[in-house]
Length: 442
Image (cartoon, rainbow, N blue to C red; front, side, top):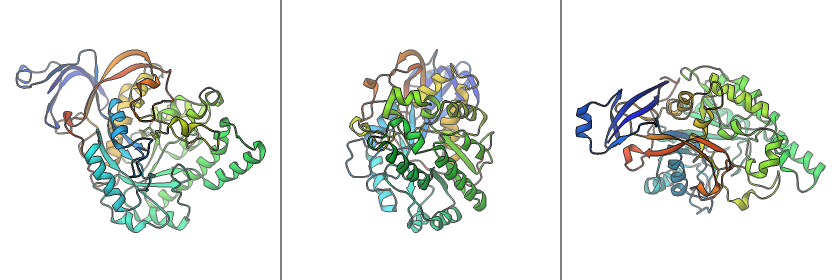
């Protein structure tokens, strides 16, 4: 296959060029017109005039629900198809499934399922508990991206609240520790307070008061403090407040041992009016906070304090989202629309460029986790490629590929859409492999 006349966005540059693919791999990348010799020898020739060509997005934070219980909310097959529909060619699935991925046996079962039915490249986190350090130390981190640690109860109730167990994880694990950081004592106190004040139901607009700014700041601060004291490789997930940004260094990813992620919904929604407009559709953990937090997070995306954008994709069925601040399920689907939404934002957010979006959603995830030969358009790398075309249309629930059948982004305008996607050059999906990790290097 030869893709030519594309506007290639890769490694901080944008240029008209071509990419040749043989099997799963990129064999040539060039600027300008494709040589006649390539045009003559390649079977499928794709003229990508007026389109962007970007590396496939790598979503390092999804909940595809497929632990073996036959969840009606979705599975690896359905949700990986939603991912590919949105230009996400690789995903990392979280461990709070039923059963949870807290043993090597559970991890192996997930890998076998993905090998049989995933449309996108895949990897699965191991999950920490108060007592499974032995399993985590035995894991093969050339095949496991890292360990997920819940320092706050969320969907799946995998809270780790033993301070000694947490300390042991930070001291002994050499892999990436990806943390959901919310203080459970703070949250529990807020639940009691608002339940006594309002009874039932508790208005959904109080969700950011229950899962509060203080809950996030205290827990993220604890995690960062432990990482600094122990030298652990820490990645703090779904940052939602301006206050937490003080914990992270701006600038490029190279050399960092403490990194941060946010999600598109924290960059799009914010403030009480969104809870009034969208209700439980925008209820997630951590909660979406104020408009000022959204603005601060956008600045952090641009200046490098945020290193990765992932979705925290959680395909709850519409029935699960019914209820109030305490009873409606937390989480929202996002994997299908994250890349086109973020690229569309570059048309209206000063300082946010398509090059930076590609860095946050393709390059940095690959570098941070040490993924083997993915995340860049380079000779010898896997041909995970996405063509992006211009559009002018609104997202609708009817567009949704995920089993859940809805999106919080319904009604929002897209300026960019996914036109074509190749996973490994159009071949079958593969399990990710990981290089030895320490200090992040280019």
